[in-house]
Amino acid sequence: MKLLRVGTAGSERPALLDRNGTLRDLSGLVTDIDGDLLADASALARVREAAQTPDVLPPLDANGLRIGPPVGRIGKIVCIGLNYHDHAAETGAAIPDEPILFFKAPDTVVGPEDTVLVPRGSRKTDWEVELAVVIGRTARYLDSAEQAIGHVAGYATAHDVSEREFQIERGGTWDKGKNCETFNPLGPWLVTADEVPDPQALPLRLWVNGELKQNGTTADQIFSVGEVVRYLSHFMTLYPGDIVNTGTPAGVAMGRPEPKPYLRAGDVVELEVEGLGRQRQELKGA
Image 1 (tube, one colour):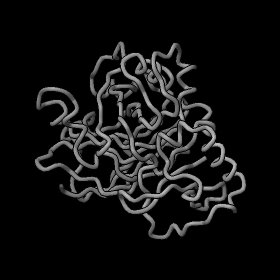
Image 2 (image 1 turned 60 degrees about the horizontal axis):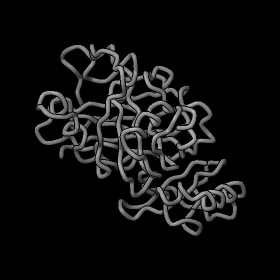
Image 3 (image 1 turned 180 degrees about the horizontal axis):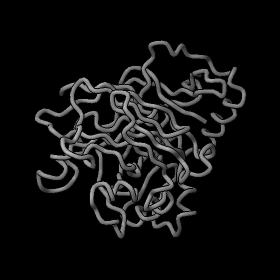
């Protein structure tokens, strides 16, 4: 299923994109697409049954309708740094022995076509297309990557916007270059795990002002989706509705020759993970 949330920011309602590409209203069945729904097998079964006979769901007019983040009330966003062989190579970093972790605050999440704000004083705002993993079952002390995959509700396209000066040159942790407002566009859809048979076979692409900048595949990940979820479960409990951003392939501005083409107000970024939907953001000054 392709689940999404539509409407003005803060007032989104649940929806379904049916197999014919028609947007359908789910608000008569569920109150939101969130951790409570993803953890409720009976509620998900009702949505899945309705998806098989979508005419029972009222259609929505998509014209002018904002698409919000596909998951509401996110508990935490855990991110994996340097998780692609080619990205580590382009930045001159050693292949990590264990996953590198950082966090993004849930309030960085915006819709897939919402404006991204370049922070005040920023000189090095960068792009990163990523596969986002949405947790569907509570995960703690998992034994294997195979077991961990069973705790995934689905997948989405994410944009891990980053300010490299704040992240690397200002001391402390990476977090202050990762948590500026609007720095995590998510969506358009949450695609349920049954429609993604192999999360390690997903092409990812990103364009800036129409020029292809990133063109990678999750097959190049150093730590697979299952291994990342298993690993995290030994350091924290992952709850339904939590998000894991799994890293970015090569092609970021930081990895390019000088002068590095960092983002500026007026730039347009488009990105996609194949099968999970496409995003488009215009950048403006904060």
